[in-house]
Length: 441
Figure (cartoon, rainbow, N blue to C red):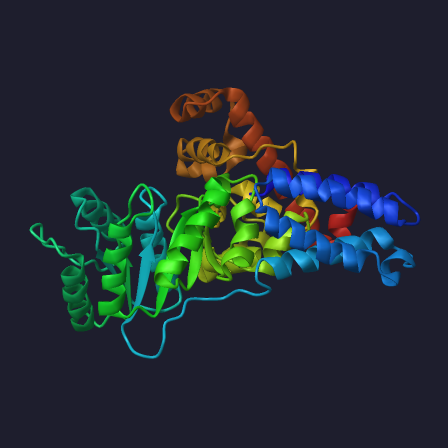
């Protein structure tokens, strides 16, 4: 996400940092480039104007112009102003004090409401809460079937909407009663959408809001639609007074205009972003962390949170013991890959490590690489996984044929594994000093 914007910012800051002393002209030239970058990223023109005015005022101050590192001072200012633009801090779900709390998802057809409903249920379950899904789009039977399917796949309770139901308000009311009986803590309403905003849709949603009195109303919007998402947020907010926004498909949005514009234009926060198709690919939106990602500074806190959620603590302790004894097998390697894949796309994870995004710019690591490696390991016998040294030429041919790969790919995996084991042994012998020697430091 934000690839195009990040690249442009990186070039602007490289030019500014290359100046021993900044002048007003240097800064104005840089801000002109920033303005073009933001407009190309489909950021609302009012947002661009306000953002540049704030940065210009601070960047032309004595603290910057007389600083020993003026370029870095400008980067710091841009980081702080981006954070302020997107809302300063994360704003979570409003659940209120009475249970079960109702969270109402609204948005246009095709924005990803149903998928988001399932992801939000998984997120809440991870927070120790008991979610309950309600398919409230009675106009489209396919919508009811889709959410029911999602709920069953995720093992989340779902209301069985009667096929003859015609009134969404009655459906939501009956579903709420069932959620109470089911001891649910959060009821998630997946409401109807349209291809565009119309009076009939808003009237239906207003009736549901009046009857169910939701603790929070979240607009689900496609991030890739840019300013259209901002305009839609404005329309839904005027009709329903939404509590916040969920931006879907952020993993495919190289521009990021919607994320940068919504808070300023609607005064409503982005609360979550969808970052992939997996059930756990819903991240709380932290403006400060997102600003760091945009500027190529990484996002270590989110990376740590993802690791904590994905890593099996018991397995991690067992692995630590194996590493100390140099007993790390290809089976362990496969298990570690599975845990890493739970955390999200590899490119996203690398982007969270400070400085890594620019270094890995021309290196493409896809999930397909992990699927291929897993297939190779699965084609080995248990003994071969424990003792890779026994894999001779004929075994390599068999493994390649069984995994649908080539002998060269099998050789590459075994070579990478051997190098990793060598590194681990060196590290276990001499700690950081041993690792330094290994890397020629």
